[in-house]
Amino acid sequence: MAIEHTKLAGKRILLTGGTTGIGRATLERLAAEGARVLTFGRHQEALDEALSGAREGGGDSELFGVIADSATEDGIEQVFAAVDEKLGGIDMLVACAALGAQPIHEMADDDWRYVIETNLVGYLACARAAIKRMEQQGGGHLLFVGSISTEIKAEGESVYAATKAGIQAFAETLRKEIADKNIKVSVVQPGSVDTDMQECSPEEKREAVANHEMLHAGEVAEAILFILTRSAACDVVNLRIEPRIQKTS
Image 1 (cartoon, rainbow, N blue to C red):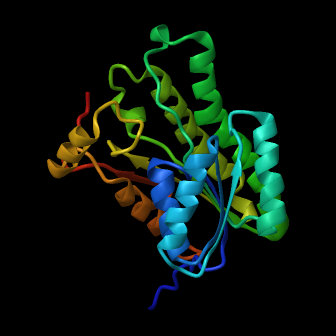
Image 2: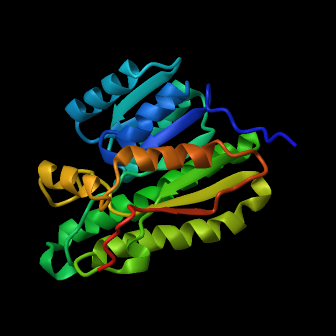
């Protein structure tokens, strides 16, 4: 029996964190598939560069960008006002806006709270707004970018791991709560990826990728596309992807 995959051409997708790292790589691949994508970031120059790069990659797509901060209530309201105006609704949410962090005792109070507002509260707020719209239209797909930090609990990642563990628990519980609304809920858990979040030089990142100790962001973007393009009957609940030689401590 032939399996009918979900086509992304024309799909209305909100991509959070599309200006850097995994988000930017995902924006390029969604554009190549012909999706209609709205993304946002906090810095105009990075947003312009990401949109320009995705448009140069080809594909019959419509791409939109706004400047907003997902850590704030006003930012979320601004983003979803743009979703309604530019996309006319939302079929898929891909949430991957996140910040790195230090151990909690090495961070200023405002700083660690801001990481939690961005990495966890921002995801929940986007999910809530997306669900309200998806419920009215009869379904949709929520995809959250988590992390294997929830499993390995490496030293130095206490705050970051807490946010990603929160996303994991939220997603797995939410999936049960909205199963009757025809809304899929998926999580992808990347290992080490060559993004700006890594505290090493570009040369060290290239060496780590060459040694199979770190993934290209594009590898994770491909995993995201795999999840989004499964059939309507198939929900990838959790997909863990990591380099062949992943540090676990």
